[in-house]
Image (cartoon, rainbow, N blue to C red):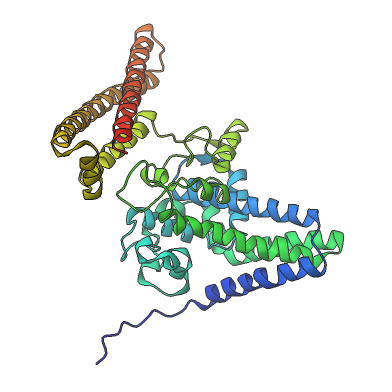
Length: 398
């Protein structure tokens, strides 16, 4: 009797759609460019429709519905549901339930629907092509979405909405200009293929290529280049540790159009309750990661031998002892700062709640809040200084 594992059956609708659209994009689009030539208006339509699809996935499916990173006005939610359906990446309910399982069981080959540990091909596209057990629909983690009328409306009529949103825009522009084929190829097919694979990059490449400045407990990476292609989703290491933050690119210079869309929508009253990770917790994660890197270097045989050859075996012992002592000291200080911050932050939250409950703005209450806020700022500054010290230690170890 053979022990050979039987592969799950192929999901033919998905396999055919991805194959046919991919082949048209690879063959027909270059052919048309050579034979006829696309105009700038065709490319503009492609870019605008691709951006509307991409941002509907990142701002809508991902940050709004999967992670509840902010709240949105019904008008904005309907737009995100419509343009998200146009990307043909399944309904909000299915997409978000799978994504929540990915975060809960990241890199677990049995439970993560697109575990990066099963290979680049699997995490990019392979997981959708076969009927794997960990890909079976299970909405037990999405009860909040099942109470959302817009989500359930889109789920019920998903295929009708998706087809209309894919057919109507190129058809309308084709009718206006008489250039049906050009708009079908660029705004229809190439846009769909681009939307698919840029989203898939986050499941695949963003777990293989890039830096891990915040944590090493999973395969997620920060990658600025992928952020350019995915409307800011490339800062994936940050996202996996702070998944409820409405930002992925936390620095002011990070390219994150999704963050800008959500923030600017709040100025218009279309979004609210934007969730932000405290600066202290971000720095704390960075310091912990830097300490981890320092310890890894001190246990690396190649690095140890290089230092011994450079300064000598006896001097190396003194050098290593001094560094280990400093790293232990920094680790202890990190623990103390974290405990102080948790205690102070809890007091601040309690004082804020009491003030709101009493609906009063007494001088003493305001003073207490001001003092607690000042203490939190002081702790943030201390954590920033510690990050600089630990980064310097890693610089010495380079």
